[in-house]
Length: 256
Image (cartoon, rainbow, N blue to C red; front, side, top):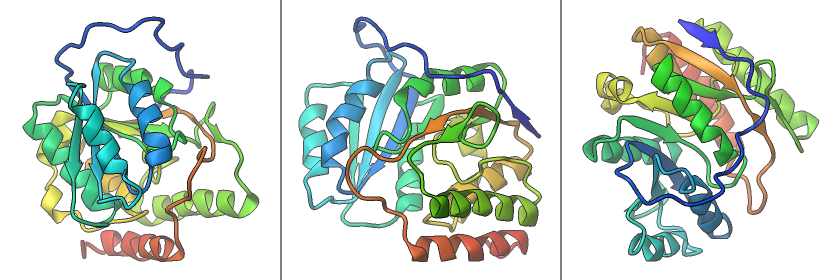
């Protein structure tokens, strides 16, 4: 079942002061590869909210992203680093982060990008919707109140077309099943067979939404505004798009 919340117009105001650290029951998983220009700022913004802790999953970034996080983690108890030996893909990074968060007792597991295309100000909205109503909450660009900025026509067509394509083939009534800004209740990730997830790029988000929906969990969408990344280079590639096109059919046919 899919429902949509359409009343959120903007992120809440940032906290005006820091609170003493508490045992955070919400883990924000952030995968990184060459995000040194963004990582300090994104961590600081997320940790302004005392309910959240951050788990960075770094794929041995050549620019030293992992070292930056490791340095911070020595003095910040709500920051963790999962260092991997090489560039192993977005999907496996999230799955590794999910498993670590579950092992550490997180009740809510969120995912977001490191490049500020996902505004940390929306995190409390995602959490509130998961605590009160939904098993999986998606930050959606394509419900009323959501949108994108700084995107060219080609990128808009690829994104909207990809969501329409996946929705039609999979019978998935979700406006934005490719977005990577979302919040899972612990029960969802404990119930799904994470070892069976095969998508590793753009289609990972589609597969996770599809498996959650098919398992009978309640999925909701809240609107977000999605700008282009502030600095650095996009990780999107033609190979990732092709993988998504193929994997949607593989999901439909039960091959993965």
